[in-house]
Length: 160
Image (cartoon, rainbow, N blue to C red):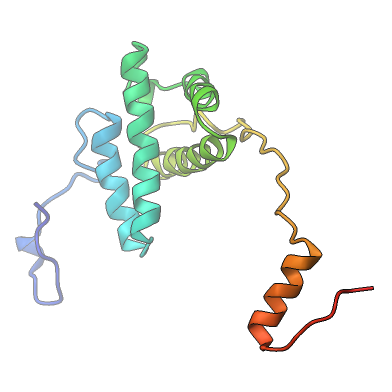
């Protein structure tokens, strides 16, 4: 439980923290660090949907690493572990989902480096999965005409 901080809180009443400890994370497992990262993102006023997506990405990686007997400890995660997870996602989901998870994990590991939880970002030289070009559907002329008629209340003759 976090102690209440405010302008009237005396310094002696605040919990002490060692200078080299950024978090209360005796073991840097992903789920413990996720809770701290969520606090950080919440303080930055990230939307609840973003928090959910980012959290699902870290939880998914944690679950995958456990299932594959890979280390779910932040300091032991290597590039190949994250690449295996992204490959796993690409085999089961749309490329956009894998790309989304990639971006969330890149942000997470970047934050871990900033906080001193890990020495290097295992995703530092990774590239995101490529997204296929998707074109928006185009309205047929008759559908477009009907849309204009409904929105303006006037008849629209066919285009030449």
